[in-house]
Length: 198
Image (cartoon, rainbow, N blue to C red; front, side, top):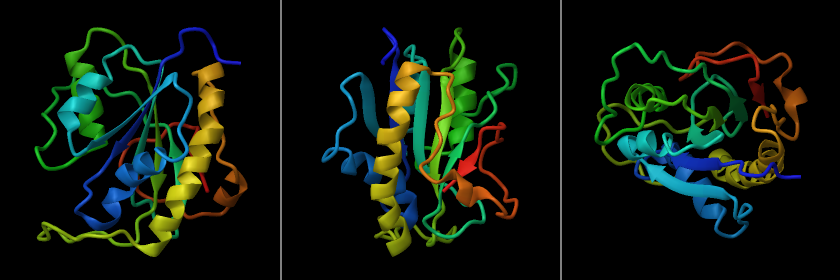
């Protein structure tokens, strides 16, 4: 059952020209074939961090960012991450014009808005191909990440009804037991207690 008035954002982030960083936009494109319920705002933000920061101020209960994130797992592994809320008092540098750093976007949104940010979850995929710092273009995603796109769509179709019914719920991925015994890994964002891997 959907709670009346629940607002949910599913946002794809990443650079389509930088190999596996295109995971988020690819998932959003795949959702065109298997749409989420009409109550969910689905949008590909690509590398437009400023646009995402302002969108996060639009009164959503929950935002799910879909992104590639290196966490030290097998390529194609999906993780559900709940980052800590950014400190509003910390000065926020604007996001880079040609990059998307979710931590900086969240810090900027917290700095810009007077109201609390929505709860943010990150549906992340472990990349196999990460461009070097000097590469401007590295087209095409790797096979493990391409395979993860449909699994991410299925995960979103499982997560979204749970979040629409209760924005504070922690929706599991379909096989969270695979997270047992995985080595600790550096995260792109601070992680709350609700992180799970698939």
